[in-house]
Image (tube, rainbow, N blue to C red; front, side, top):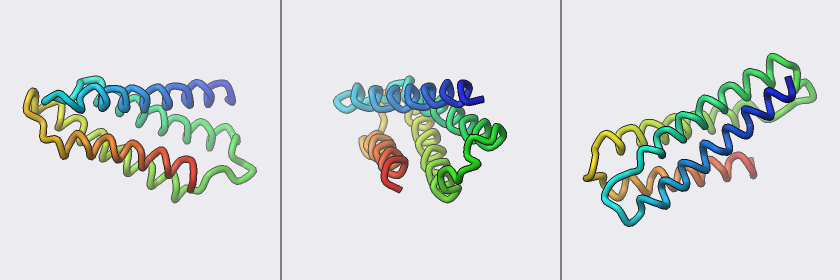
Length: 116
């Protein structure tokens, strides 16, 4: 189970890296990269699977992370995925506020993961 957990952890990190890379690519462009949505969906799914495997496999029997923390991260990840979906559906005219909200929320999610 630990190997499967580690696989999902890597996929989770790769998903957020795709989101940050796609955001950085689209900062000076009018559109939002489609990779941002795909990366957020990957990170969201991998995060859910990580928690499921860890809980089901007993990897967090020593306490593990707080479920409040995981709930906050899940909520932020859902908002990021929705914003990324809306941004990619808008095509070439994405509001800069939407793009910057995606980038800021990814950073908030990372800060919550590390410091909370």
